[in-house]
Amino acid sequence: MVIDHDDPHGRRLVADPHRRLPGRGAWISPTLSALELAERKRAFKRALRTSAPVDTGQVRQYLEAHSGQVPSADNAALDSYEPELQRKTEH
Image (cartoon, rainbow, N blue to C red):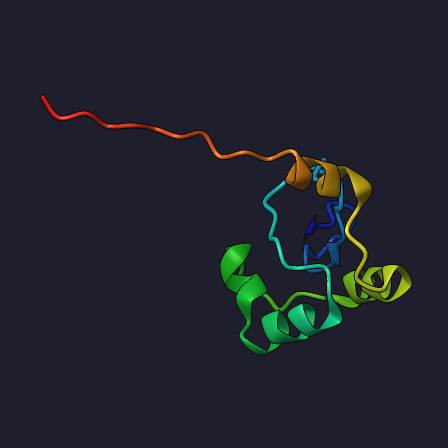
C-alpha cells in the first residue's frame, strides 16, 4: 500500500497489490487481522515516515472485497522462489 497522491492531505492509503504505484510504501499480510494489528501499533506512521494519522478505509475495503486472497502473480513468484546459496570458503 502507498499514500494516495490524489489526496490533497496525503493521509489516505491505497492498496497496491501489484506494487507498481509510485511513492513510499508499506507492506502487510493481506488480511484484516494484519491491518488491525498495524493500526493498533501505529505501524503505518513509522513505515511511511509521516506524523499525520493515515486513513486506511480504502485498504480495509480492498481486503474485505478480496477476503485475504493474494494476487496470483505473487503466488507464482513465491512458488518459483529458490534462495541463492552462497558458499564461503576459508583459505
